[in-house]
Length: 291
Image (cartoon, rainbow, N blue to C red; front, side, top):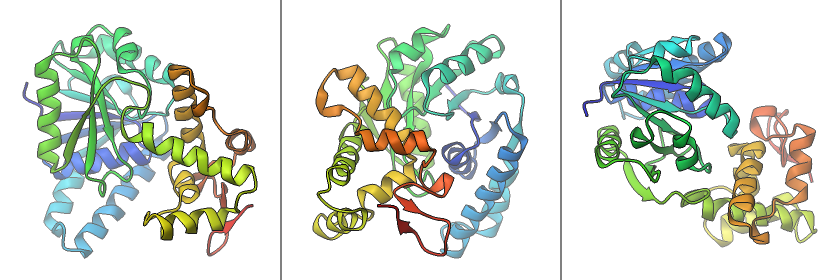
């Protein structure tokens, strides 16, 4: 399977990061979103992130210009029909992803590979709602995409070998490293990472330590680059809750029960950096713990 044209669904942090790295690797990229403002903001973000790469000597000005030229945007989902590979990077809600695939399917070529950047949802179940389960798989990039080296590749029960090989070839061309995960809830990275974050929230909820003490303990005591609560804010508390819910529902084990404090923050709309408040308040010059 020859892949040269990639469609990206979603212009948020993950979607624009995927478009960024694919364009620099020489792919023609078409990125779509339901919001024109989101698409405009995404292109500004890609430009700024490429500027950082130029300043660090990772790419040249010419490579930046060529990369930006390779990214086109559209608000019409069906425009992605002629692409060779579609990477869905919409919000982490199964019903949203299913609706996207259902709208897109009638317009795809027979050979188009469908993938989802889901961080937790069953690939087999998503694939079963399409007309091409053998050409469907999980393609999970890490955040932030231009910096993080890993991509999880997840086969559904019906994914065929040519589809897997084609997606692995894309990862190789991006200069990233692939890890193969089985189709279990949250796969590898989030199966391990999210319960750690959830446990840190429980430690806060139970008064074991405050936000600052929990984060500094993991940064200095376990040599983590970010504290777990700081990382939760970076990921998005709604995404953390969604993944913990998938783990809890999918594995039926109480150790994956989302912390009530996490649920409360999400109900309050305090989702982390993207809403300026989470476990830290980001509305001032420096982040301030909220507990």
